[in-house]
Amino acid sequence: MSVLSEELPTHSPRYVLLSYPLTLSSGRVSVPYVMLYYLPVTCNAELKMLYAGAKELMRNTAEVGKVIEVTDAEDIVDIKDMLGVSDD
Image (tube, rainbow, N blue to C red; front, side, top):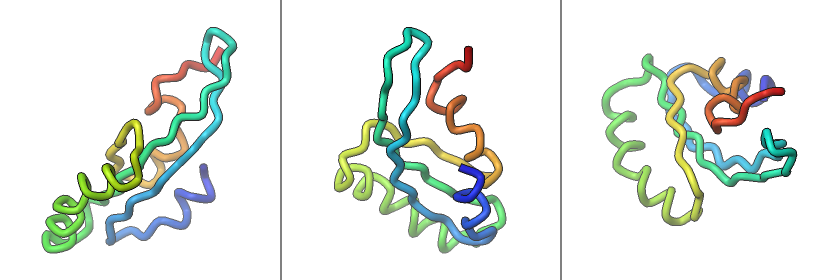
């Protein structure tokens, strides 16, 4: 995840489709299919509006189970916390 966070631009939004294997507290393995909606606070208003308007279309087209909004690329490193999985 740290590689992904380093690749994201600092002034432009992005959609990231992610399938990430996680081990749940019950011991089961889950592979959720989620969309990260990366919207840095430093991007301009026009780009924010463009990406916000297309977010639902992207979500429905990709058929993801969950959309996670991220404003800081460093938050992506903590994807387990965002998906609600605890480390044991």
